[in-house]
Amino acid sequence: MKPYRWIALLALIPSLAMAWPWSKDMANQISIKPQEGPDATRPFPQRSVPMEGTKTTPYVHDHDAAMKLPNPNPATPESIARGKSMFKIYCVPCHGDSGTGDGLVGAKLIVRPFDLTADRVQKEMPEGYIFAHVTFGGPLMPSYGNDMYPSERWDLVNYVRHGLKAEQSAAVGAK
Image 1 (cartoon, rainbow, N blue to C red):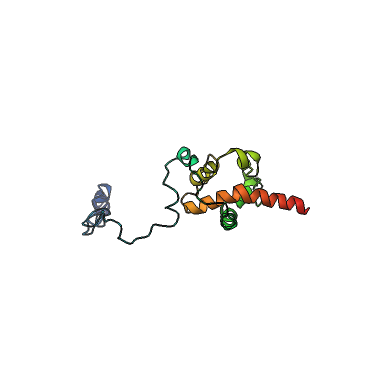
Image 2 (image 1 turned 60 degrees about the vertical axis):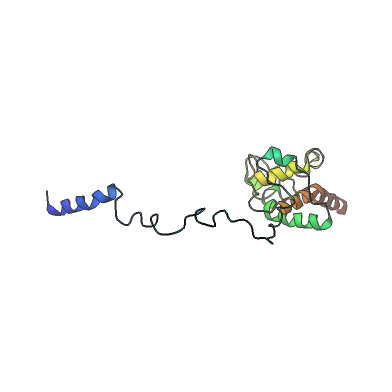
């Protein structure tokens, strides 16, 4: 066997054994690892203020627990206006401006997005159901729990419940 082949073979052996001397430098450095050290379980500062939206809605782990929550945001015109802005950002692509499931993205889906102006949504489903569906998503709907504060999700519920139907009625009356 020629000598350059032996050199190539000897050079490959450490890589096969994952034994390059620099392969573990990042893991074996002198540093404080996450959740280690003297202040790993540091309590909150004395005069700290909780993040917006965390006081009004308890943390829920699943859809069923969220369904039972009452809406802490009253359906004021301000809340409905904030919900409308959230609706335009997150819901219009699939549900459309009217909320009937005629959005541009929704038109490309095999199953049409749910009609949010239907009587079933407006009268039969509790507000916690809409909040839970926005928070955790559904079989076809993505989860927006990490994208919005809980108070923003409740404002969105107020818009779906009180603003969509009013806008649809106003549009029909104007024609």
